[in-house]
Image 1 (cartoon, rainbow, N blue to C red):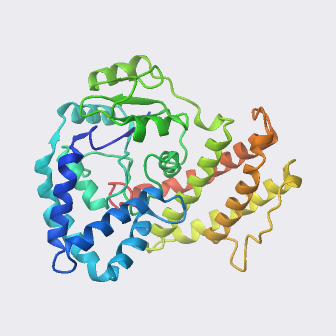
Image 2: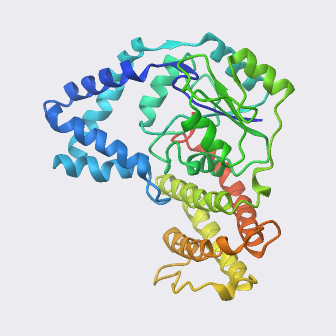
Image 3: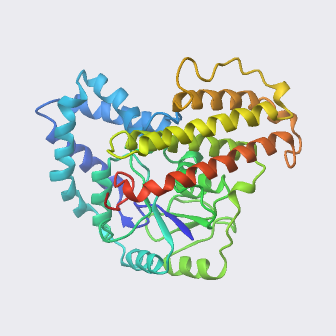
Length: 379
C-alpha cells in the first residue's frame, strides 16, 4: 500500500495562525540587511501565490517563485539565495518550538514502514527541502531515520495543493504504481477532495484543527486509531488508471511531463549517464505517441498545426511537451461530443497513452533512490 500523508496538522501539530507570522517575522529580520521587510514580505507572499497558481508542467514551483520574487525586489537570486539558505539552516529550526509532535503519528508511520508499506510525505511543496526536513524532524520523523519514498518540496514539484495534478505528479514520480493508494490529511479542500477527484480514497484525520466539512462514506474520518481500523477492515483500493474520466486521464498525462522535467533537471547535474538515458526514453516515447495519434480513429478530427521538433532534437522534452499539449488541447474539444466516454475512441486513446507513460516512468523510478534531492535516500 502507498500512503500519501500530509505533514502540518497530520504528522505534526502546527497552527498556521501562529506559525506563519513568526516565520515571516524571522525571515524578514534575517534578510533586513539586504532588503527591508516592508518590501520583502509582499514579494514573498506574491511569489507564494505564483506557486499556488502554477499549471505549467515544465516550470517547477521554485522557478515560479523565483521568476516573481527576485525581479520584484530588483535583486539577482545569487545575491540573496545564500542568505536565505542560511536562514533555513540556522534560524528556521528554532520555530519548531511553536509546534509539537503527535506520538500516535510516529507510531503509525513506524508500524506501516515496518509492514512494508510505502509512505509519501505529501505536504504542500511551498518550502525548500531544507525547511521540509526540519519540519519532519520537529514531528519526530527525521528523514534520515524513516525510509520515506518521496518528500514533496518546491525544488522538483510543479503543482501544489489543491490541484489534482499535485497528486498525479506524486504518482508519476513513483512510476504510476499498481499498489493501492490512500490520501491521509486534515484538510478536506486541500487533501481529501482533490485526491478523490482522481479516484484516490481519502481518510480525513481529525486530531488537530481539522478543516471543517461534512464527513461522508466517501471520506471516512477519525483519529489514528480509527485510521488503523479503517485500513485493516474497510479500505478498498481503486484501479486509478482504468478510469474513463477524460479530465482525470488528461491530468495524468500532464503529470508525466512534470515528472520528466523533474528527472531532466536532476539528471543534468549527475556525472553518470542518466541524462542520456532519459533523452532516449523521451525520444522513444515521442515517436510512440506520434504513431498512436496518427493511427487513432479520431485523427481526422484533430488539427494540430504544429511541428513537434521545431528545429530541435526529437529527444528534447520541450518538443514532446508542445506536441502532447497541442493534441490534448485539440482532443479537449471532442469531450463534449462524447456522451458516454466508456469505450469511446477518445477514452481509448487517452488510456493507451497513460499506459505507455506508465511503462516509461517505471524505467525512471530506478533513479529515485539515487536522487536524494527527491527522497531521503543517500545518493
